[in-house]
Length: 465
Image (cartoon, rainbow, N blue to C red):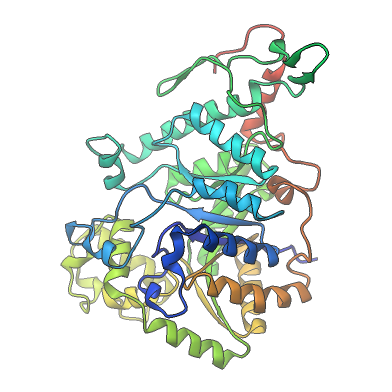
């Protein structure tokens, strides 16, 4: 039996996210990112489509690599302005019953003690529908604006993240026993003090001597997502992630990434199939292939060359404005630009890749493939990706919000349901139950967070992590 295709909606609390310039399209509501009603509408569209979750990306600094300034990003609203995604979630949880929420938060700039409380609070208010996309933040602009002279080196950011995880695991899993909350009116005891213990963490980067400030939520640890692409990032994902986000344009290339992550998870003592792996995809769908192609051509009129180059400059740390937009990249001198060329040459070696060609290629669907066609054509291609790449599902982008997600729910979801590839209704109450099975709301025994469970018992003094 073919496995279920898991679906997440992909958004950022900003104007320009995966598609640059499409905020200008008459149907786009991207400018309403600051309105709660817009986000409620988006969440309810996804819930009607039985999506697992809304994945909200984030960035903590402006994109200022292109031309050495932020102007191009501002003109196209690319990640600036951007509002805090975490503050959306409690309202969206109140407006939905089943949809999960995976929120991007950086381990580099949070304190684990206060962050653990934030996530537990959201898990309480959503009845267990919260996930955390763990990032370490690559932007130099974020580092400078958050009190650092320069960005912390890449591998050290992951070292910080490793210790961060140990602290939050201890707070979520070890500090409070399952029966610590007595709520005994007659005895006058709300919490049994003997069943709450300090975590006593003394580490290189964090010192957290005390107890968790919140009582445990139904999931305790939120569902953990990660999208690292470097060697150390993939190792981190294999160790900690329950969901892995990929950005790849070719299913065979994606398969090699998936196989590598699953093999690393196995080497960590984890069930490799317990990791659910998603690739970003943009879907342009209509009743017929011809109508969908016409819709794509309509969208492409509004893409921004400069906006796409500004976004890719920030992602790569390379100022693409120094290049002639029509000069083939094989004549560029820097290693970074050669690396960029290699990525796209692997996709189509016969094409002459220039900065303009790349910007046009990623204009509507930056980060992954653009699938265009009728519901049947789209479903066929999604199934092909699932089979070739060994994926568990997709992050569905929304270049013309909320129209493109609405189109997907209207046209594609019924076709996938007819094929038995998308569930007809939700199973399980919490987000983690969707990952595991109904009745299993907490991390599996082979997950590193589970090692802290034995410390819930109050006998004796806690070990120092």
